[in-house]
Image 1 (cartoon, protein in one colour):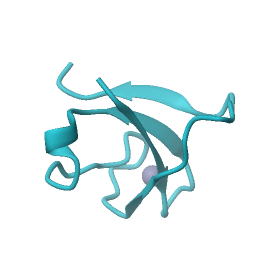
Image 2: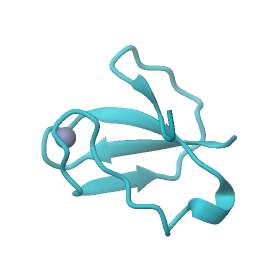
Image 3: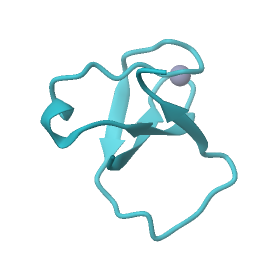
Length: 60
Ligand SMILES: [Zn+2]
């Protein structure tokens, strides 16, 4: 499943969401840390690694 980097605009937390391509733009992404919906999807490829990024999996 593709992974998408997201950044919460509220708590500035970076996290990764796995979802199907068909779900992108439909599925509401919520910050796993604070529950905010003010989340932006980063369309960069994963050329960087950050220890601050937690892996977060939907439908678990
Ligand atoms: Zn947040």
